[in-house]
Length: 335
Image 1 (tube, rainbow, N blue to C red):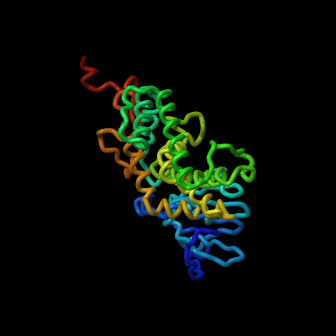
Image 2 (image 1 turned 120 degrees about the vertical axis):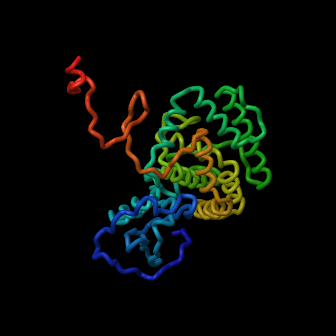
Image 3 (image 1 turned 30 degrees about the vertical axis):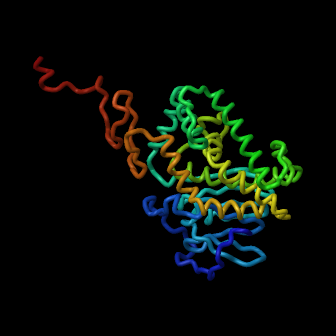
């Protein structure tokens, strides 16, 4: 286990083993105020009051569920229903990963009742002009100072490819790690070179953090602007904004160190770097900047509305009458 969390005292349940009431969503910690992620493998995860317990041959540690953004579960891990219940109540994202950190499956719960950003995301991605505009914003977030106002999607991809190749070349020269391009088999992690293994592990952490931020805001991981056709298209869009700054340098530095534990050292280095630069807070801010309009999008509302083709939405909880079946009023009868 490399979560590097302090071992606490064993807690006793105060509710007789029964689940406590779900946390009010307004009481939950904001995603940007939480630690980035914790990774565990070959252990059993359960629940004690408001913490998850992680039991292994090394002992037991206690992790406050409300403090986590992402819980990464590696091979040989079992988790109880009660632990998942509490993690869900606290809005953390759980990621099941394969051997050495290859991502397999993720689940996340919004930290907001509002669907405002989700609706905005769907509207933007459904229109070619607005989708391209968001893609241009994403490019400028990565490479400032360029004029991309008139570029097509194909031109943006071409520019991005050239810039990313230069980034890899520069970091390769700085660290002394040879680089001739990404060459790896996603189904066979161990067959990849050291740098390919390091990049896979680093990107996996970045995908997890991005997924957690997206889920916490109530957005869809599948509605991407640059990437398309995959259930995590938007996750890849957001993660790409930070690869050149975070995961690529970390992967090269760890590889250059000559470590024999590439995935473990990469995860620890990623966690430290994510904390150092305040990445979770930045991701949340950047998603809002990409999707926001001039109007303030409220994320804390707990209001259910009904869609209306004329007025966009009308209050729910009201029994509306069919105008065609309305009973005649006395005035109608006099006429």
